Length: 340
Ligand SMILES: NC(=O)c1ccc[n+]([C@@H]2O[C@H](COP(=O)([O-])OP(=O)(O)OC[C@H]3O[C@@H](n4cnc5c(N)ncnc54)[C@H](OP(=O)(O)O)[C@@H]3O)[C@@H](O)[C@H]2O)c1
Image 1 (cartoon, helix red, strand yellow):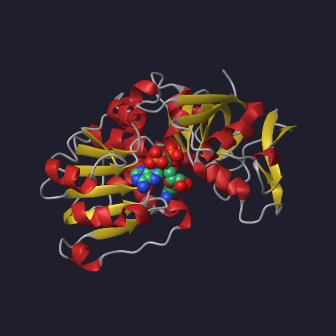
Image 2 (cartoon, rainbow, N blue to C red):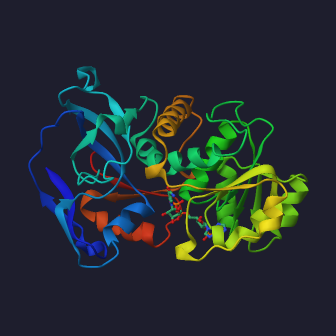
């Protein structure tokens, strides 16, 4: 079978197309015929590593997210899964088996069913972005632990960077859960995408005064801020956070140090919550997967221009270009086509 691997950290050109045998699933594992492999920033960051040229042994197949059809199951896994469509998350987390290959071995706990009505494109776009978005939306004091219709009724969410992959997922999940959603973007093109995703109010942070605009919409402040640029937006966030609100931070502005104004955050008993999808608590992850699958079943989340997330497809042999596209800040979702 065809697979992409890398044996050293480095630029996209370390990604090599190889031919290797189809492996048998071990205990607790499932073998999936991959249709789409989803690419996220985490995939190029892992490939790059901290030192270019460091050996990677065993060879690593990149990409955490994917979708496909179960082809075989290992000992201890229900036979009934064979032939079913699934979406996959964290395939390559502390494992050499990512989704950029024709047949991937995936732990049973890292996949869930993908309804017939949902495309493989959607299935491969769920993992990192939607699970991260779920966590950011469920860490607010007295807020819901679950998402779904009505769970965020009466609450206001501010999503920074609503045209990003995680931002898009946060808008879609928050709207499905009946929150009022405000988002920030940096251009009219991105404003259009964020509106397509379902945001109620879109603010261009390059042209408008974000604090003034948010306060017009939510005079008492917002309940949850889904934050992609914590250092850049710390002052803004402190000025728009409402009583008992949370700022859920999932990215680090390229390592910029974070400085927080204490008193404005103390006054509303605000919370800063740092989020990393891989190390989030187990119970939470199970709930997040169930809720994301329920949103898919409801037809409440989507991909493509109409959902505010343009798709960029690359063939398996051009996985290096797919990584370069994500690293270059492609707007929308980058997918690798492994099978039709
Ligand atoms: N912690 C976790 O578990 C986790 C999970 C997923 C992703 N991440 C990280 O989160 C980051 C984003 O991932 P992604 O897949 O969503 O990437 P993406 O699709 O490239 O989106 C990033 C978005 O952030 C926006 N942005 C940048 N600076 C901003 C600012 N000051 N205010 C508002 N928006 C701003 C960008 O738009 P403009 O530049 O036009 O503003 C862009 O739309 C990456 O660093 C990734 O590694 C972390």
